[in-house]
Length: 110
Figure 1 (cartoon, rainbow, N blue to C red):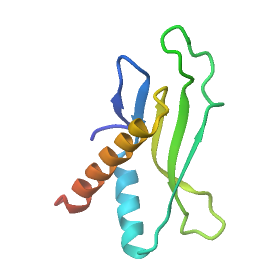
Figure 2: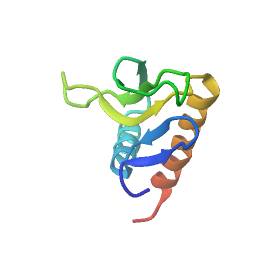
Figure 3: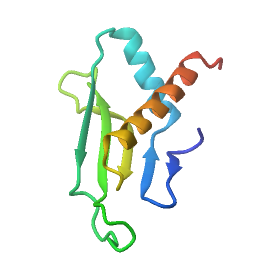
Figure 4: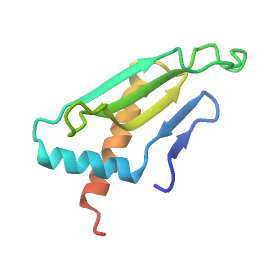
């Protein structure tokens, strides 16, 4: 769990980005608000200069966010993914892996 980059694909571009601190924030917020809502957005306009000869798909940047508890504050990112595998199975795999790690962090003894 060290660092910000959690996983990098070697054949197709896939980079998972999140930290243990982000997971702990999500966990604490979920304890404070049982109706906590996660927001997810994706864009294909942030990655430039990508060599399409390596992979025919355009890279997309996905981010999972929660509402900031500070009134008027920006959404807080809790996980990010940059990937050229822009299909349901890949995004679901990312989210499922993240949730498994989140459960581990939530019950880990410090």
